[in-house]
Image (cartoon, rainbow, N blue to C red; front, top):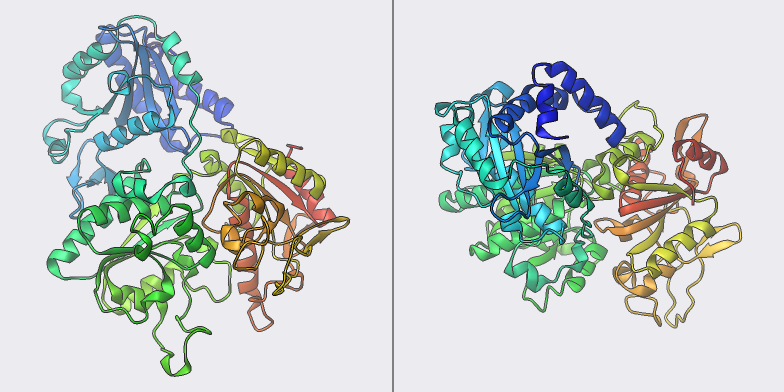
Length: 621
């Protein structure tokens, strides 16, 4: 709507909020939060007054504009033409109701808002700057962004004295900070970026720009990673990144130790934060390493990005590599997928006389001044995985270690749809008693149901041949044939459903013809013809994912059932408690169902479960 249209409702804040709520439900297909409605009611009339006083009532106002490829939304985008050039001009506006701001706990990027009773707030100018960078990164058709884009943080309830802590950090490219006392300065700024003319055409052109496909982890080269930033971090991602940098500097100066937990679900950018930290810590001369627990993920990451060639090979390690490392030999150790931590590092390669009673958590904490654990409790998929927030917290507290816990909640996978993440969690009953819900197509993410495994395979194969990254994965409900020394193509079929049968990914350490080993299954063209399991796909992402739900997870009369006898996973043994089995099987399916960037296709082997899914997923192939 235009600024003038918005201003018509200014004296009637409740009416404006209700109209926007109705429109939001129509566009986004779910209700806004009470906080969002409150923000519209309190902040939008203030902005409308500024625009009217500036003579910009014809400027187009885009409210809750989505940040491409994520679940974030920009409060307001003002669209119009530049007064000097006549070209399209856009001003991103972050509206804050803050009336008082205080410095946060040490880190220069953290701020405390007393009225909200919390400390983890990013500088508003930095926040809107990152939104501008994200648009530049994701909209390649945006011409001359330095002239086209500008960002504004408007704290309309705050006077100058109240926001002095922010003034020391306000000189940011793309972003300018204004208090409520600076309305005239804000009007002048906006008149310098927007002409007093209609902005509908400019808004339409912005909305029609093609969104660049999301940058996939495995498309990044290590030499690029070393040279410059590869990911645009937003909000809590950016805050976590700066928190760790601050703690490393602090621990290095004081020769102290601090433990960091960064919690986030699938697709919230844990790996992006970790790799950006690895790059920046390396640039600043700190001794740092990036460690994972899964061989497939580590090998794919190392080979796909060319880490050894770029000199990063020694900095990408396994959790088990720290049993004999010197105490505090690293400034920072970035433990990605830390939910895969094991009780200890003893395995079949360890001679009996070298076995140790030290836990992997202890080994990692001892090695680095700042060990950083990035994890998701709902991705523990084996009974012997002990990387939970509670266990890491308990160990750190038992040793008297200072701790920080940070949370990532912005969704970057699954089309940036946090609504789909909620759909998965409710389908798998990971959130208590919240019942499953029908998928309503929110956020543009595609959830489809295949009637047969042949249909699912044909769809995924077609996506692969169209140039998308695509794979099929399944629950671990079929035996995985052991390789033979003289194995030749084709591999024996493992996953059998009626007349349809396909092999699991290869257990061989090398290629068999064009069939890749499991560590290369996700990135080699020949991998499209085999089925992946949770151990092959965890930590990775594809444009499209096909998921076969095996007989270990079924629905009966609307109730979820887990059948451990249907699982062929050797880690799920009789002595493993039933509660643990239920947890790891549901977590495994959460991993499988959240690997897709554009969409997911589902097929359930059990007919009753397939019928139940048909009520939850209206979309058909």
